[in-house]
Image (cartoon, rainbow, N blue to C red; front, side):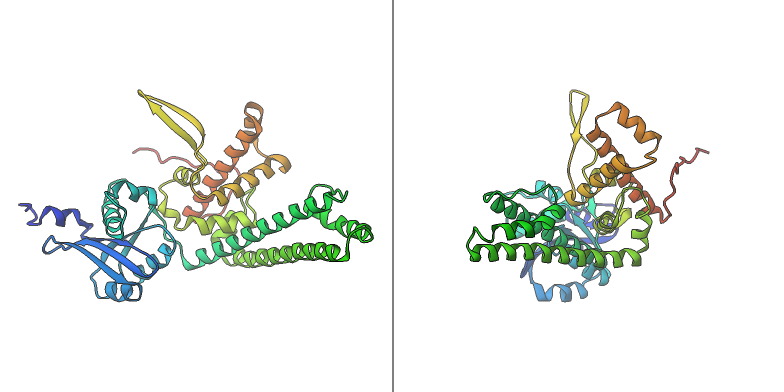
Length: 358
């Protein structure tokens, strides 16, 4: 019992900012809850059915709920916030060190309860419903692009066996494939030619579906002020602007632009021993899809920009091309965070000034 507060050690650990801390391990049907009773110091482990989770927290006083960031975590975070609770999402890497013994729902909930109270823990920003909807369109488009690429490569390989060769690129294939199929119509069985024509039709249908999703993303870009702001940044197009805002979640979940850049894996890995720290290649952590879009945008700047700027020109003369591309992508990521967090328009050549000490 603590003499100053009159609370047991378990009660002190189980409270943050005056709120009771709850570790919630979510699942498809059965959720596991771990907390410490603030009045008695009793450890509470409760299983709750999915349909009764909101009713349980609706009848509970405001508390801090820790949830591991996984499938459905953002949905439950929004629902619990609507009930007046404070919710923090934790990356799985922050929870894993506190899982002791066999991995069960009970130990997972306890690990979440411990991890959410650790000082310096990085939390995942809760995405809004609109942001998750935008990411859904991106995931659908990404899948369709992969399917179209597989169909195109398969078609090239099949026709190559019969002597048909095409130039590189999707447009070249679709522009020449009909001529090649007409030439092969007299040599191959009609059933094979018809099957190949159906595959060409599937490729064209996938391209139409991809175009329809991009039109929907364009509508979201025009309606969202944050997306319109960062779309003015050189190298940031439709896909990057919509994906960046949707992936970022809450901009203020990151303390600085460099932290957002590190979260995307665009900063060097650090390896240190004996007081010496060595910088290696980029860490490649975080969301690979957004990082890829940023790198493609940076490559477009180096290849096509009429005025890339003195900083980038100087970097290109001193370092390899890929190093300059990644550096430009990191600069774009920092600019995206600064424009979004500051709610300000992009200004070319803008330089931030540190506040002078009084």
